[in-house]
Amino acid sequence: MTDLPVSITKYAERQIYRAFSAFEGQRNIAVSGFLKELNIDKIIKQHKHVKFSDEAIIKALIFMTLKGIKFPSQLAYHLSRKANKQDAINLGFDHKSPNQRTFSYYTKHVMDAETNLIIDYITRRIEEITGKFGIIFDVEVHKKFKKTKNVKTEFNRKKAMLPELCKFVKKYFYPFIKFKIRNNAVFDAKDHLDLLLQTAIENQFLENMSNTFRFKFDLGKENRKFPKADDSFYHIKKLDIEALQIIFTDVFNEIYDRAKKANVFKERRFDVAIDFHDWMFYGDINAKMVVGGEYKQGSSYRYQFATIDIIEPGVRFTLLALPIGRDDLHDQDRIVKKLLDFTKGKIHIKRVFADREFFTINIANLLEEYGLKYIIPGTKNPIIKERCRIMPTPHTERNFRLGDKKFAEFNLCYVKGKEKVEEKVKERTRMVEKIVTTAFATNIDMNENEGIFAKNIAAIYRYRSAIESNYRVKKGTFRAKTTSKRYRVRLFYFLYSVALYNIWILLNIIISQSIYGKIAEKPILTSKMFADFLFEAIAPT
Image (tube, rainbow, N blue to C red; front, side, top):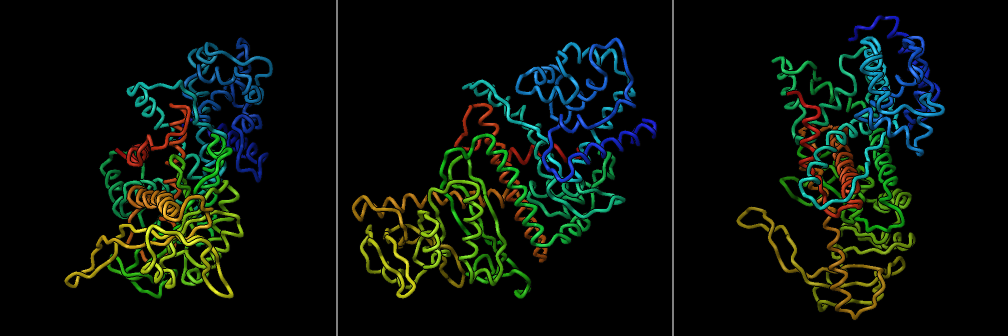
């Protein structure tokens, strides 16, 4: 609610929508460009003794809030810079922009209470409308700092940046997830997304989190309401599989664009890993999208997702995640092609690592067609599995040919190593570590002798273990728990965890570049620390 007259709020509302209509069909809008189209002169009091126009100064103060600028001194500095001259012109400062003293004097001695309310109202309504329609403003959180080795200073800088970065998450994550909610609904999309975000980062059940927050509200500890879990589930279930994929691909594209602006992908080639991820299923095995597989964790059935990840330290983004159904397991070529096509449109690929489930003649030939170097364990193939029993280790068979009419040719590297396998012990199944021979198929050129080359390929393949740690972070820090058998709920939760994980990687890049001037190989903002700050930013006290 606001204490402003209805005539003023209605006028402001009309002008805000009219300004947005000038950018119809555009997702990314410059804040100053939008404010240039916003006409508020009829509701702003004019003061002749002020050097700059009242409308320009008011727009500058709105600009300050929307851009996340904290102080008038920072606002004055931003507008005075040559690189931001267009912002100053758009706001109405044609020749010279105000200094800090002008802004401070205006807010303390010229601006009255009603004008202050108008600024707050217009700013709030703009933020609400951008969130509703998925509009993205050009807010930058990447700030330059002098490099330092002072541990205390680095910690304080990380701490100071985190609240702003958490606001950044909501501004650039929420607008993409569009629930179909009527205008007269008690809870809007933001309310549901706040609840879902907290449920994910607390690794909790939606029902528990909803009941906890609603109980706190009933005690009067926070002047806000939270939706019931059933209401949030209802809106998730209305999104079909294709819509969910589009939503979260758009989220990644926004993250990618911001990482690209930070020169993360400039003139670099990256190792990537392709893998299947299982979410075990305990229910009707004929349910949609349930697939069969090896018995583990008390079930032979699961929901499955295919992903492709960068496995380079510091930039371990999950580039794409795809839902897998029964038919997809018999059409792995299409899955791999879709993953590679998306990835090649984003980055330059150095090498492809894949799990043994992806080893087929077709996929080996597909990677050759794409001109990509690869390493894939081939021991799932019965012919190669038999050769592992008789070949010496370490050893490499050059130009090994698999298949007759339809064949693939590659180097086959045999090495011994430890591997955990399931074994029944006294009617119980447990994981036992054994020494086994593994054969790696690769089209990487061999320059060393057969034994050294085989060892090197096995050592390089260990880089792929990064994808397992990535998955543990997504599951343990960013994925909500659920007993729901609905596939749309499971898919939403999985893709939501991937999105949060990617945002965490992006924020680490932003912070490390701001503090050190480069991308740190290890996360300087732990996933738990990130999750805790997000929780505190939204949760009721």
